[in-house]
Image 1 (cartoon, rainbow, N blue to C red):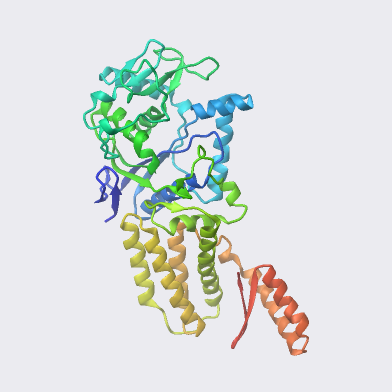
Image 2: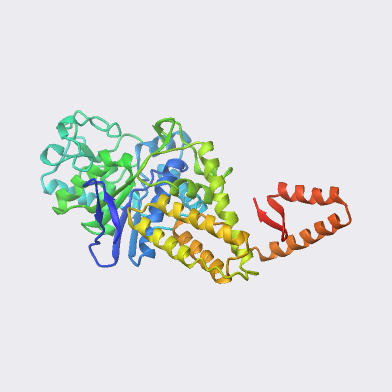
Amino acid sequence: MILIHNTLTDKKEEFKPIEDKKVSMYICGVTVYDDIHMGHARSMIVFDMVAKYLRYSGYEVKHVTNFTDVDDKIINRANEEGIDPLKLSSRYIDRYFEEADSIGIGRADVYPKASESMDDIIKMILDIIKAGFGYATEEGSVYFSVGKVKDYGRLSNQKLKNMESSGRVSMDEQKKDPMDFAVWKAAKPGEVYWDSPWGKGRPGWHIECSAMIRHHLGDVIDIHGGGNDLVFPHHENEILQTEAVTGKQLANYWMHNGMLQVKGEKMSKSLGNFFRVKEVLSKYDKQTIRYYFLGTHYRGPLVYGEEAMDEAAASLKRLWNNYTELISYVKTANGSNDLADTITSTKEEFIRNMNDDFNTRGVMSAVFQLVRETNTVMGNRSLSKKGASAAIALLTEIDTIFGILPDDAASDDSLDSVMKIVIELRAELRKRKMFDLADMIRDKLNDAGMKIEDTAEGAKWKKI
């Protein structure tokens, strides 16, 4: 039984999909006018983990993530560069996939774009007007009439009278109410536009998601997710639009990851306090980035900084050392301790924590307990080949969801052979009392990330 914290009810609820063993999941994507930053990466990694675990648990997942490729910020940036807005957004979509691949993000099943969904968007706006929830202005914009909805604010737990109009939606004297929001914007001179029953224009921000969900997943979906900064107004307005047309609840489970913060503020391009993923990757590998995010619970806030990343890298190195040592150890293992109880309990803790609202932090706690115990029995050579193999298999199984183990750990045979020759050479130098040369080999290897340790059973090596 999987429990999911549902933002709509603010409770953990048993996950029961609409169709048995099938999951429809829509995750709000990025507005493509710049490279993705670490705040985006958190949401991407979180929902990548969710999709992978659901599939691991036997569900057939249809995962849709959109691109907002028509937007004020895109138009402004394109005007600055003197290029077509869709050309600009296409460039950043390409970069998105490059950077998503670079941090191990599995591909969604569908990536709809606002620019390619105009027929669906216009149809939905017509349905909103027909249902009595939308109105067109003389200039050719269309607004959703928020005042006609009785329970606006139930996702964010706010009362309509206490809300303020979103800064993302510009004020318009033709609005009937300040809280009304645009589902279609009349084109301004020089802007990209599409023809519509109301004239030339482009969609508002919120309507694209409602239209895409309806087209690709249906009226009601299992899971809708995104960062918790989208709860209001974006997801609230999606609910209004869809439910005004269908009369059905848009999503049965709403999931929101906590914000990545820098000195108490959320990381965002508008605040200028963001760190691009490609810049962080110049200092840290993708596994460290994934471990940094998955080492905490997805719903909590997380403070970004190099100190935190360095701590994540140090912790991850302990896991890597253990994993590579297990791979090396299993080749010569002759102990009798299978660690059967430890392997079983770690697997159980993995399942239990993941089923409890995807508690990746709890999983990592169990993994490091396994690391401690396997290190102990490897150290006294009592771990059996069966036990070492089982530990490797379990870590590899968990990593199909986490993606934090080294890419080349299982293919180090050639490196191990070379290192054995180097160790033998060093031993011969020491035997001939040529300690300066022996120490130079050790120090040069250390500089290259290979550590030689002298033990009672002879010299051993590991990556550092």
